[in-house]
Image (cartoon, rainbow, N blue to C red; front, side, top):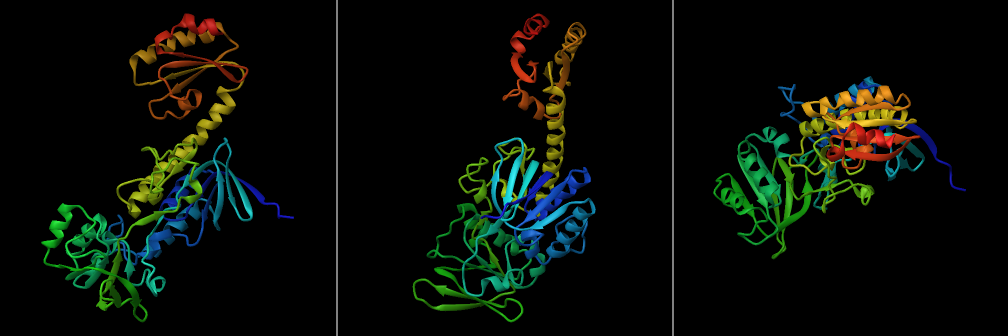
Length: 406
């Protein structure tokens, strides 16, 4: 007999414990929402692979990724956020109660924040895992300053590899680039290619892939292999940057929320996914820049929106959809919309059995979208015995037409 899973209820379940997940936890915990962060392996996520972060505000001397994430974690725990180190197996976001299942537990939540992040694509070369965070890096913006006057190696020739490589030349005395293609061929755009070829600090090693990584406690040498001759080429370097792409950790969300072809979660500016009550933040979502600072910004928005969603859910279920009533969807910044409030007040006085709920879309359209799919504004929703029976939109929005439905 399979063991019955333990069921736990939370206001918010956050999937992923990196910079985004921890920040979302801080915001949700501080809002006094019962919150849990589920992290598959290491709290802090990919940021812990960066030994010095110098571009995160508030740390003028820099700070290691591990130490910064420890501070994030401490702050989240201060606000009562729970942590569970385990792997999420399945999710079900189809109902009002969101289901997140691990091997042993079933978590039921009012809202979910997806913050799994992404993982760098690795070369698969010998000894690679041993040097991640000890000479193998994935972020030039984070680690360039630590490479001042040193020689570094870049793996890859796409836009990110070449542009990050050029950024590294501001600090390193030499930037060597391993490219899998023949001489003259790169995967980047032509503008970046021309600029890189003209940069005296950059050197290109064509037809090569990584054979293995070497060093005692930290990386000191990367052995490249020439694909045409089989020659092994040892390259001494202070740091090896891998820019061969990222893989979002979104396999379990396929068919659940809308994603790009590459598997990144699609959101709007409020971090809302295609499913009501489910938000996404950080590297897991489709975005331009993936940094700790941008993860924090995403997660702050997601945390606030999760709080708002839960509050609106309570209003929707406990007030608006109880008994009989009318809900006026309007924009408080619009003078015409405000003027119609007088008509509704008159209706409310005449029809004492109908409560009048004012749904202002100026700051949030969440309630409006629940009441009508497209959130038409202005409009009136007529509710009888807890069910929506009529939507009256702007073209026919008159006191007479509303009264005809009551």
